[in-house]
Length: 115
Image (cartoon, rainbow, N blue to C red; front, side, top):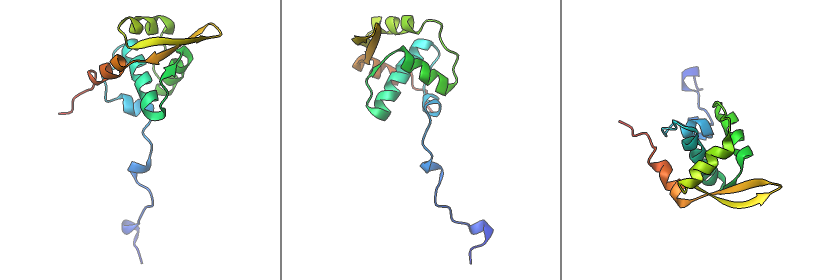
């Protein structure tokens, strides 16, 4: 017979999926531009999604419970000037953007070191 203190559990903490906001905590995301890059990398790493639009960004902001930017299109355009994103297509007047290798590598520079 197993006592209460010896209870065996079928699941542990490793079975709980990491949320976007938990994943994002490992980076110094001090600006909207940095957050947008993090969102794009997260979506690519977790689902292979390399294309996005402003609606996708705002959806992830809602998940992370971050204060929304007033002009998401401007933030993406400025990040594109740094070659973090590139226009991939336009659908119904809405630009679709693509994460670049430069943007992917940039996120690593934002990692908060442990120690």
